[in-house]
Image (cartoon, rainbow, N blue to C red; front, side, top):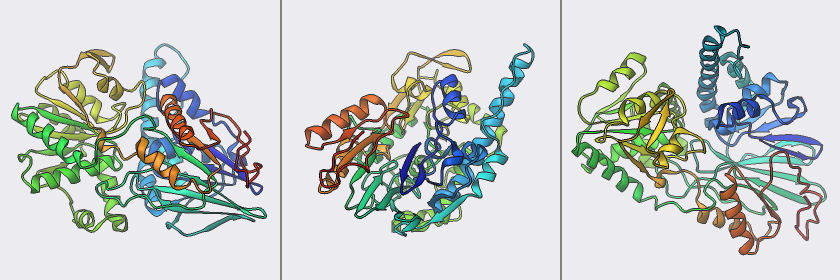
Length: 457
């Protein structure tokens, strides 16, 4: 969540859910660090829950302005925020069943499905590159960030005798990724707010994605095991399905049943079919099919059918949410399969601290699932090439593309070591005014001498 004050207006960039330890998450998500009634407009870069997931709370607590996003982001939020509301309701019900017997205070859901639906009324879908006024002397436009379907960078221009341009990257994508177009160029940026998720490391080449996936499938099938893929329902699951389709076409992997065990993933895949404008010709042909995918692909919606997957005999690929293994059906599949050394857990996304997914990536000998310590015997494979975030080299290159006009760089949306590593790299490259802001900090960038381009913080 980033509040921009300019031209007498207060603009909110993002309103995401914090994910981590339950008590800290509850505190940070329920109590917003600003008055929602004082926000004039919100701009959303993309639909991932860590960027969009607390919008229903924002609206429920008094925000009445427009929420600007691309058309695809709005359509995705219609699926994802409703699902999030249902999860919060179920979590509260589960908690209350436990504490009611002890006479302890009952929990209230962070927000409900109805509140999520109500918040969708305030979304305004806009096209890439279409400038829009936010008030006198203040306008913005969106550029393609190449991260997930509909993702955008925000260019915010303030005219006050001269123009000052702020660029917020949202989550910046990578070049040459399957499915989506590359990030768009930006120009004449004075203030850069840039993500730093992978600010301290570089990904394997995009081309290695298919190779590693094929190796894991061939190796696991040969020993009669299953491949479990915890995948974010937005973008990562669709990319994996697309690559499996290509590998089967090329006979690089043996025929094997593929189950997408996530109703939300199926709904999001349907949204992909509504937005062919975001894809190259090959990917567009894939998603334009009535039921895109593999001859052996099955989307699993029914709960009983999901449970039945635990009794499958022989090799299979199970793609299921959530991507960090913190909730959803993937947790049940892990509980039933990670004690079998024939199986593989294939990690294809970022794993935040204190999540089950991070514990698997760290190769813990045991992990706790549903309150039980479970030994990890399955093979754990972390394929960084699948990441749709720009890595350290790509982030530095993006900043370099703005060097001619840039004055201030703020590195956000990264854990402290990653953000500080990228900050050090940019300072060493000659960037002045590089800041890793702390939560709640105020930075007065517009009062800086525009010719000098140094921030006063």
